[in-house]
Length: 511
Image (cartoon, rainbow, N blue to C red; front, side):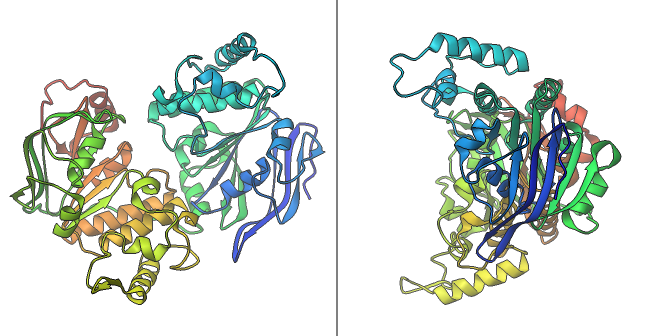
C-alpha cells in the first residue's frame, strides 16, 4: 500500500490487468508528486501504455485502485479522469485534420445547449496557454497542414485547455525530429516549474535521462526498479529494462561486392513532398549505405524507388546490375528485394490479419504456401511458428491478431518475413523507430548478419548514432538532393547535423 505524502497528486496501488493469458500489469504501484516529471521506462510490451490507459479510464483494472489529489478515481471513465485533472497525449494523435487548431481544442468543451459558441474567449484562452508554456501554434491553422511537432503541441494544448494538472505523454518523441524533441523537453520543464505533474512514457534512454527527475522501470508487466535520474546511467537502465547485460552488435570490415541497387541522375516527380533531383547512389553487396536527413527532404521518394513503388521521371534505376524500366513491388520482391517500411502499422503489416497471414503476406503465391490457387494453411502456420521461434516474436501464437503485438514484436515479424527469403538487397526505412534498446540491438544484429551473408542494405534513418554504428558509407539528403556517400569513420554527428541543415560546402552530389 502506497502512503501518499502531502505533495502526492497521483497514487496507483496494486494495479493488475490481464488480457486473456497475458498479464499486462502485475500489481503495479507508483506515485507522482506535484511539479514532478516521472519517466515510465520499459521495453515494448512491458505494460507502460496499458497502465496509463487504465489511469485515463479507457481500460478497467482487474485489481487495484487509483487516487488523484487524495480522492478515489472511478474506474473505466475517461470523463472522470479529465474532470479530476488528468490529460493524456497518445502516441498516435487524435485530431481532426479538416478542422482548425481552435476547433480541435474547443471540441467537446462546450454544452450542446449553448446557443452560441464563445470563440473569442476560447481563442484568448488558447493563445494565453500557448504563450505561457511556449507552445507556439496558429489558432486558425488547419491541423492537416501542420507538421508532426505542431500537431503534438495542439494535443498538449487540448489537455491544458481542459485544466489538466497531471499530463500523461505516451512515447511523445516517437515521431519527432531531434530538434522537435529538444523543444518538447524545454516545454515540459516549464510546465513542471508551473506546478504541473507529468508522466513521460518512453523506451529511449537518452531522453528519459534528459527530461525526468525520477524513473520507474517496468519489465514484463511488473515495476522492477525505481531510480532518481541523477543517480543512474544508460547502462544500468538498459540492463534493468531487458533483465540482462545488453551487448551491442558491431560492424566488422567486409569487402563490398557487385552493385545490387543503383540510381544514376534520377529525378522523381513531387509526390507528398518527396521530390528528388539528380540523385546518384550505389549500394553494393556486403555493405550498408546509410542515408540521413530531416524528415520530409526526399526520404519517402528514395524509399519508393528502392521498393518498386515509384519509377524515375529521368535518370536510370538498376537492380542487381540490370536496368529497371517498369518497377513494381511484386517484381522487386520476386527479384530478391526485402523491404522494411517506415510505417510498420500502415504498410508493414495488416493489423486485423493473423500473425501467420502477415508472415506469408509477400509470398502468398509461393508454391510452399499455395497449390492450384488454394492456400496451404498448415504450411503457412508451420512457417509462422518457425519465425516466432527463430526471431523471438513474443505473441500468443500464429493465430493471434497482429494488431495486438507490440511495436518491437511487429518489427521482428517483418524482419522474419523478409530475412527468411534470403534477400540480396534490403531497404531498411527507419527500422528501429519507436523501438526499445533490446529490440534495437536485435534489429541491428539482424541487419549486420544479412550484410555478412552478402546482402546490400540501404538504411534510411533519422538516428545519427544508428547510422554511424551500422553504415559503411553515409550520405545526407536535403531538399531532394543527395551528398556523395562518405566512409562512416570520417564523419561525426556534428558534421552530419550541418549537412542535414543544408550546409554542404564542397560535398556535392553522390558519385
